[in-house]
Amino acid sequence: MSTIAVVYHSGFGHTREQAEAVRRGAAAVPGTEVTLVSVDEYESAWAAIDAADAIIFGTPTYMGGPSAPFKAFLDATSGRWARQQWRDKLAAGFTTSAGVSGDKLATLQALSLFAMQHGMVWVGLGLLPGDFESADDLNRIGGFLGAMAHAPADAAPETAPGPGDLATAEHLGRRVAAAAMRWTGDRSLARVGS
Image (tube, rainbow, N blue to C red; front, top):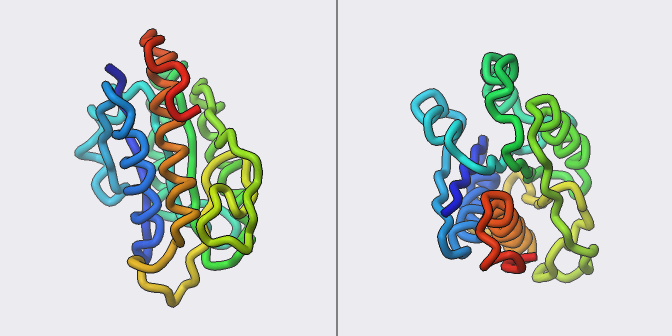
């Protein structure tokens, strides 16, 4: 059994859709328990986050980095950082922006650096780039550090991110869940989602 916390912020609902896809992917790996935590409610979820074997961070990219509410959550972990409470937990990340590039890479770099400061072990996407012109392709945006999604600002959350971006988020969830099984000693699922 492994536990995963998906901690996210969503300003317009697009990143929430991506977070749900990550949760679905992780939950598809047998023996995985997933907790979805909005940063609007993180203070009541510290126990679940602290107990997780892996934490997957998700935030929209605003102005070239994590959103302010998500950054407030990151800053609130300083006591955990001082105690190295999350050392050796697995970590991964995902982000959405209205711009096709939107500087999503900078957001994922910020999340991975945050995880490194906590002594966590980062799990990347593990996919080759897909075809950007195909809305259904996995990793169509071509990221490696984490799952990236594009959602025009005026798009309804039910329509964006598109199917390929959500499938990429599901892949990330499965990959982290499989890695958590290996990390916690369950070798029977070592190749699930890899």
